[in-house]
Image 1 (cartoon, rainbow, N blue to C red):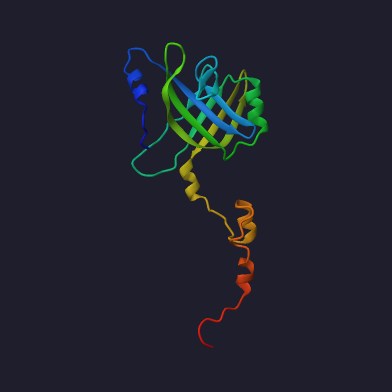
Image 2 (cartoon, helix red, strand yellow; image 1 turned 120 degrees about the vertical axis):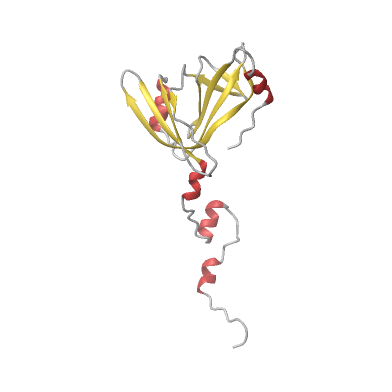
Amino acid sequence: MTRSIDTAVVTASQQPTIYPVLMFDGDFSSGHLRLHSGVGPLVYAGNTYTGSGSLGKISSIEEGIELSASGITVSLSGLPGDVISTSLGEHYQGRFAVLYVALLDDNGQVIGIPTILFQGRMDNMNLTIGASVDISLAIENLLRDWNRPKERRYNNTDQQAYYPGDKGLEFTEQAVESEINWGRA
């Protein structure tokens, strides 16, 4: 995947000292869960990312010349209790998640536009409860949707589910049973 890197980030990356941070944004049913690998709150684009101290670990991100749908696993550890309750009690599968890498200045502010490392849909979540609670979240590449069948019926009921009030397929059921004489008898 071709990535464009902001010129301010390129300039900052050439400095003798850089402060990289990973940022996670997961869209849960109650709202976005935003975490970063630093300490304390981090504000970017009007959104506050909660510092987790570390994001745990991220599986390798595989990319190649050929078009393929590989996913990643993000392991989160040392999370606050409200994050754990969110992961247990909310619908998350199929919802969007993004993983960014950003550079911070000496004041802890994000430089330029963070680079997207991976984006996709959240799949499975595993919890490991021990001395601390660890969450392992699988995120699928958006290309995986190409392999899933699209089930559309192309009747009025299906059309109303996607476009309420549209009358484009209102008479399709009647047309199926109709006998049409074409040409001369």
